[in-house]
Amino acid sequence: MNPSPLAGKHIVLGICGGIAAYKSVSLLRLLIKAGAEVQVVITPAGKQFITPVTLSSLSQKPVVSEFFTANTGEWHSHVDLGLWADCMVIAPATASTIGKMAHGVADNMLVTTYLSAKSHVFVAPAMDLDMMAHPSTTANIELLRSYGNTIIEPETGYLASGLTGKGRMEEPENIVKVLEGYFARSLTLAGKRVLVTAGPTYEKIDPVRFIGNYSSGKMGYALAEECAARGAEVTLVSGPVSVTTKDPRVKVVKVESAREMLAECEKAFPASDISIMCAAVADYAPAAVADRKIKREHSEVPVIELVKNPDIAATLGARKKPGQILAGFALETDNEASNAVEKLERKNLDLIVLNSMRDKGAGFGTDTNKITIIDREGSHPYPLKSKTEVAADIVDSIQSRL
Ligand code: C5P
Image (cartoon, rainbow, N blue to C red; front, top):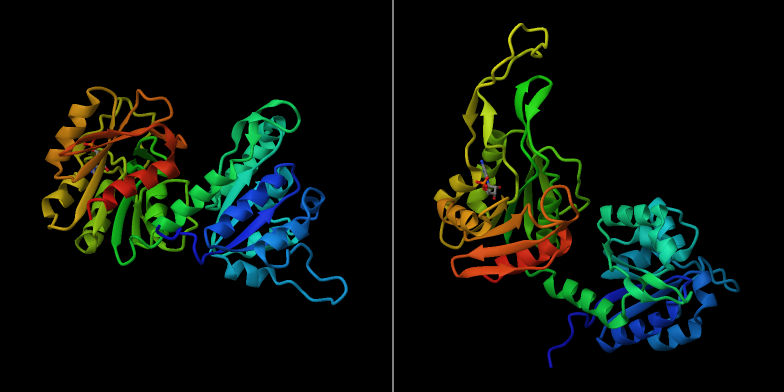
């Protein structure tokens, strides 16, 4: 049997004070069984639910909870723990700890370790359905997501309160699967160079107006981060967006117009092993940019003459060398599959990711996407998933062609 991708990994398991803490014992057991070295950090409230003796027996390490050992005055270094960890998983994560993590309230060892952690962090919330649904909880979870943490969504089911709803911590077996997937994928793109385009382009009309579109950049940023998490050197050529990346391994090059985007892509493309064209590039740009604001007081309605923008994907497709992989996107409203196949051929892509505007939860601005990956062999539809999960599916599909 192959060893688990968790073998030899250093994992900090954070446990908060919620009834789901009883499941943390199984989680710890499974992590140890997979060969991981686990350091448990528990909040003061967590100890009301589960004893440190159980946890230290299973992990074979003293459980960390306080900043100091009371009788010796020994300081427990959250900084060292944060550096030691290959990943941190907080399960269960209560509303209180999620709030503290989101806002940097470092009043216990678990939160200080979280704030010091250099590694990836997984958060498995568990709470009553009304707490889970409160705008404060959902906003805090979104903040954690924006810090780059992976949220292991709770399930809907029977809760300790006797009510039924969303808030059950994900089962330990599934948490282990998420962690195994993460470590199995890490470094599989080491040494590879990746170019990603993201967001819209803005084509200037005058100093204050532009032609643009609703692309949020979320899908492209998720793809760039996924490739970086797998060890690639990533250049992300991004149009104007409000999303940011916290991943220092992603080199972001900000541009505004399609022509600027093309120029940056032309620089990065020759050395790129994989290029993913995710930007929603404006098809047309004003032929001339007015040097002053066009005034409404004009007697006639102005006519803006447009010129065609360069097709970045097609330009790179024409220069593609053997061994380079070029992926594109197609956002369609009708004749989805045939339009996508036509673009695959015309732009000389290796694969095209189709999203249909007819699918709920797909397309611009959403946090989810529903895709079909089309290549010359056929098409592969995927279910509706978060954009982070969709990014992992797309990168898996690209990697299978390397
Ligand atoms: O032709 P269409 O815009 O639908 O094609 C979409 C694909 O082509 C996307 O991958 C998009 O990033 C890319 N594209 C491009 N330059 C353009 C237009 C589209 O790179 N000018």
